Image (cartoon, rainbow, N blue to C red; front, side, top):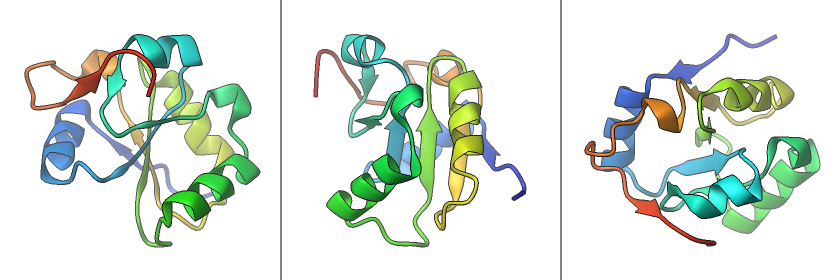
Length: 116
């Protein structure tokens, strides 16, 4: 098993500000995602997350093998489960600790409201 990679919400905020094109997968339900999500994130609910759904996204978005993929949810729990599900991925997988709850809305994160 790979060493678990996680990033604090504060560090993620800085990383996002530096690179808004980072690969961010929101593993919450579609209803939760529609109500509020980080601009540029993709929604793959934890129950739908699989090797195939990841391969499809990677191919469609032309994500490079060495490019980090971040998982986020409301509190960090589902993101951690998603990370465990994808532990054999060729891509570095990073879990955003404490999820959206840990991100201060004043930290330069852009949100979308409604479906993407």
